[in-house]
Length: 264
Image (cartoon, rainbow, N blue to C red):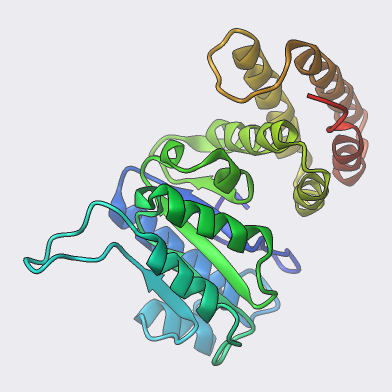
């Protein structure tokens, strides 16, 4: 899902990070993704015409909850999002949605969450209620904890970023999960990618191998050992060969989930 739409039958993740230097682009993309999460259409989502899509577009949907930085008595935004705001989400997320199947929490300036707030957010992302989804908007995603980023799908809206940027984001997500060593999260992530088209999958493999080169040269902070980097490079090379032989993407991601965590 490189764009803020979902194909017919495509299952959306429970957590996304939308990245753009433009606040308006971040907010517009988040609104469209929220509509896709709530849309009733059996075709491409958001359809733009169902009652949920219309309410999201109009800013009146009761199941889209916007979280922003507080303001001071002069109307200026505070420097951080504090843990109390996130704890309020934790409590509210236990309450069933009003109209839709999902409550969507849209957190603007998520990269301004302080560390206690991010830790509270992490617990929510690790054990999310079935009826809750989270969209984090950020200009600087590197300000978010690795553990928070690894539990979200990262979507960039940078002008000119293109498919290579999407492939690099996917590679970063996969390798961070490898570094964390959480097999359940890795299995879930790979399962969510099984509907990917073969061209995107090939671009992902290439970007992942480039990311491994960055790790080996010290240009990346993802903590994977040299030995494991070499093993993973061999795994990606094998997957590239399979894709060229028209092996199904589902099979390839099954291999990535099975052989991804073998040590750090």
